[in-house]
Length: 239
Image 1 (cartoon, rainbow, N blue to C red):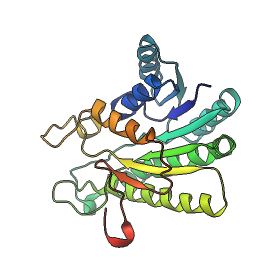
Image 2 (cartoon, rainbow, N blue to C red; image 1 turned 45 degrees about the vertical axis):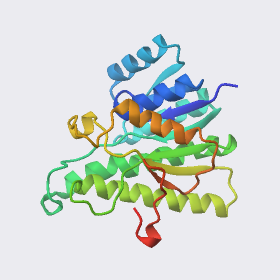
Image 3 (cartoon, rainbow, N blue to C red; image 1 turned 180 degrees about the vertical axis):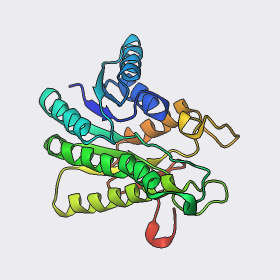
Image 4 (cartoon, rainbow, N blue to C red; image 1 turned 90 degrees about the horizontal axis):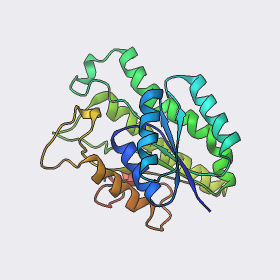
């Protein structure tokens, strides 16, 4: 039986490469994007490769599109078995935290945390019915001399906390659900203005790294997994 995955922000970058990997492994890809033209173009590109790809409109800053996307999936794709929360916005990655306005911070949190949570919550019933998995694409939140984007880091810290807290909830309630996060590491994408460096991955490399973990046959519930395979342990200061 073909399995189905819904990937947000899948029209470009890491999300699109995850879609390639999942599709090439026989999955039907529900491709989430806020821009209809770009979403349809990406879905059509996947189709030319023999991948079953279906565009789903969603903008994580717009409550109504989250509900519409969730309703569409519930009615037309009740066999959904995986949700990959990939969509995110960075905010101004070079601005010091003390210079952010509340509106600028709210915009990042709305997409990366609140919208992501609402979508996850909306899809939990069918994911639970199908013993599904939820994957959040994240970043390390420890201190770094090279990477300190205030709003983006704050939002991903909240996402990591959400991942582990929900995992604990699922386990305690004995729900057949798995939620985890992967931190693919520095990757050249539009999000960072296509920054390049010796330590940076390409989007296809990041997509494969993520897919390799998805398909490793292990249960990763509650884990925040770094690109090198190490699991973050916030209780002991290991990010």
